[in-house]
Length: 384
Image (cartoon, rainbow, N blue to C red; front, side):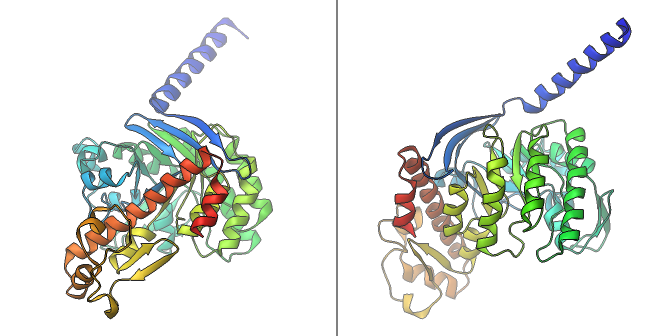
């Protein structure tokens, strides 16, 4: 190699390392305890906006808010990280508005870590036109046409200023043929390369696809794990699969993932699911279920749920759950919350959401403690 070429090569390497440093600044994963009988593990994800103790449940703040709750209330509930949807923020209020506000954290008044998705799941669910270049779709607000590509998704997530980004992927629908699932996976891999090349800020997770086909899932896990992503996301497991099929995907994929990178499961988080995914070594997981159920009056109890809108709660003056320490249970009765839902008062949605999120975070706190003491399976038996 000539001296000029050698110098150019070193310069390029130096620039690449600088870009990597700037992108990764403040981000690191520290592995903690691992359960002796399962793949369950604890750890800490370090970000520029704070640490995330794992396993961790990630509430969905789709449009820049966990519905009905303030950032102060989320802090009190123990929320360490929540999920904001790039697609929705792109449409309303618009990326430029958030940029003028100096990013999502300041726009929302939230000073802890944030995760944004690629926007792919919402776009694909609209029946968008998918090509190898990207996805063309119509806004569900006004019917205007838009285009998302790996490059634009990376640009917009960087502009939003979240701590963790997800690479643009082709979210494979459930029930497709092996041939279509393979094509979708290959497109995801091509987009992963483009996402990684375009990404300049924050931590980036690559997304594993492959539907419910073992060979494809393993191929995708090896491909994504072999790339220079900061973490791994597992996608396409909340689009109609059975619980058994979700467990199968985790069983195939987890042994192929690097132990030194955090893992996120997209869109799964029912109570029994949490034990399953933690047992398979997932570190974080997001789901709309606790907050969505709360807004229709379905409230968590240990080993059960109650529908607070039922007439039998009209004169029940006990708390939602005995021994629950959440704000709602400490101050209000089932009868009062039943009344709020009956007359459609907004406070009912807030109080129900506070309870359900407190319940989930209390459970995950107990799971972390149980893994540290090698008592994870004992806790699972107690809860399920």
